[in-house]
Length: 322
Image 1 (cartoon, rainbow, N blue to C red):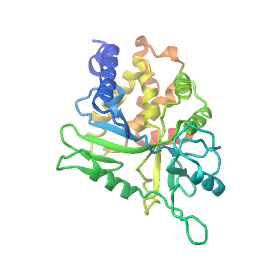
Image 2 (tube, one colour; image 1 turned 90 degrees about the vertical axis):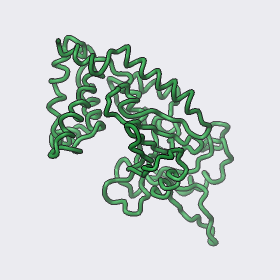
Image 3 (cartoon, rainbow, N blue to C red; image 1 turned 180 degrees about the vertical axis):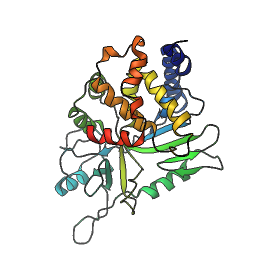
C-alpha cells in the first residue's frame, strides 16, 4: 500500500473531510444559536480531522461587545470621543455602522501579540480626569466559569478555557471579537501568497477573524491584565483552503506529534499543533502550489517538514523567518 493511500485511510478522503466540516457547521448553526455569542468549532475537529484522541475546542465569541483596536497610536482625545459617541456610530460619529465599543485594545507596555482592554465607561474623577480601568483577565475567567453551562463536577479553568475531561474533553474559550473594520486594516497590510484568496474573501465579507483571548504571556504579567490577540478563526479559514495533499501533510505532522513526540517523556509538551501549523504556513509560502499533488506526497512531507520536528530547529527557523 503506497503512502498516499495510507494517509487517505488515516486522515480520510477529501470527500469525507468535507462532510465532517459541513456537519460541524450545521451543528453549530442549529444547536448553538445564541444572540450574545457566535460559537466556532476549532482545534483538530474544527479543521476536519477526526482523531480519537482529539478533544473538543469551542471558541465563544462575545459578539455584543466588539473591541475597538486603533490602527495608529491611540490618543486620549480619542478616548474622550469614544465615550461620547451614541450607539451604532463609527469613530467619526457616522452611523449606523458598528456597535458602540465597550473596550479599547491598547498595546502600550504589553509584550508582542498581547494587549490590555481599556474600559470605555470608566468612572470620571472629581478633577475631570477619567479613571483608567483595564479588564482583569482572571476575574473574567472566574465569572465565565460560574456562568458556564458545563455542569460536570470536574469543571475547571485551564489556560484561557473553562474545561472538563468528561468524554474526550471539552475546552470552552470565551473571547472578545475585534471588529472587522480594524482586523481588515491589519490583513490588508499582510503580504501573502498561498492564502491571498482567503484574505480577500475575509476582507470583502468583513468576517470576524481576530479575538482578544484571556491568555497572558508566560512571564511579565503578574497582575493579569494582558490578553492574547488570537488569529485562530483566521487560521481555520486558511486550513480549510488547503488542498487535500497539504491537509494530509498537516495531519501526518499532528499524528507524529501525538504518537512520537508527546509520548516520550523527554520531548513531551515541547511542541504544539500551533507550532506545526506555523511551520506548514511558512513552507506553503515558499513552495509553489503545483508541487502539492499526490504523486509528490513523499517529497511534500520530506522536503521541509520532517526536518522541523525538533524543538530547537523549529524555534530557530520561525524566529529567522519572522
